[in-house]
Image 1 (cartoon, one colour):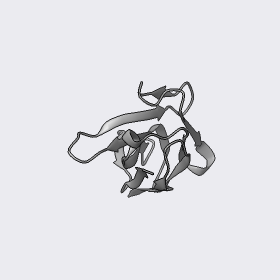
Image 2: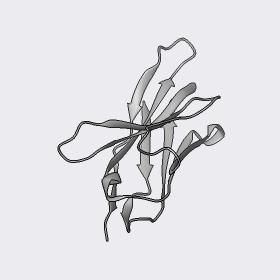
Image 3: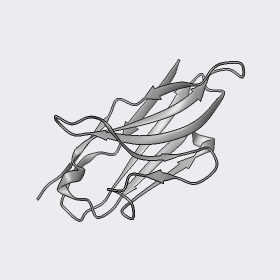
Length: 121
C-alpha cells in the first residue's frame, strides 16, 4: 500500500507565499511523475504543476512565474513553492504520484488527502 501525505496549507494574505510538501511512503519500487492539482468549491480539479523523475516541470498558465515545483527523489517528496499568491489561488491542493510497488507492477496513481490554501486579506 502507498500513502501520500500533503501538508503546508494555510491562510495567507494576497502577495504572500506558502510552500506545500507531499511525502510518499509505503511499498514503493519507483515513482515517475509527481504533481499538484487544486480544486476550488464548485469547480473541477485542475492541474497546477507536474514534475517527472528527471526532466522539466510543467505548469498551468495561471501559475507560471509564480509557483515552482521541485522534488527530492531520495525522500520521495514533492514540493510546491507558491509566491505572489492571489485570491483566485484559494483551493484545496492535492498531490499525486505515479508509483510502481514492484518492478513487475503496472503504474498506479495515488493521491494525497488535500491541504487547504486560502488567500484573503
